[in-house]
Image (cartoon, rainbow, N blue to C red; front, side):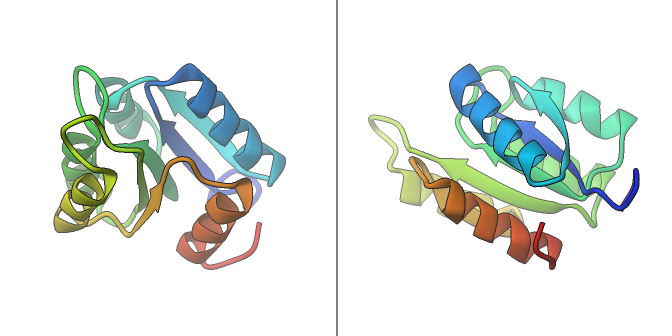
Amino acid sequence: MARGDRPNVLVVEDSPAVRLSVAGYLEGRGCNVTEAENGRVGIRALGRCNFDLIVTDVLMPEVDGIELIKAARTLQPEVKILAMSGGAPNMPAGYLLKMTRMFNADEIIYKPFLNEELGAAVDRLLDRPL
């Protein structure tokens, strides 16, 4: 881990409220957080910085979470990935999150979630309590 042993986390989420909430929670737990509003911006961030963890939404405009996960597995194969989704009108969250598993997301979380659920998933993926 870089920068004083603080984990570098990329949060990719198109909803500003959710992105700010997740980023703020993780920063409060000692993470260095980079934010991206969609997968295209997230992939650019992967080219500039090494991350310990990516927390990504699945359904996003321009480039979705599945494309981001595929790119991350090429650019940074060791990065841990937490996929999150609340689903869509014609696509339940369970289906979307199963798809992320096919593309090697390490863990999934269903929206809405509690901060404690997010924290527990991040702790498991980083293999240490924050």
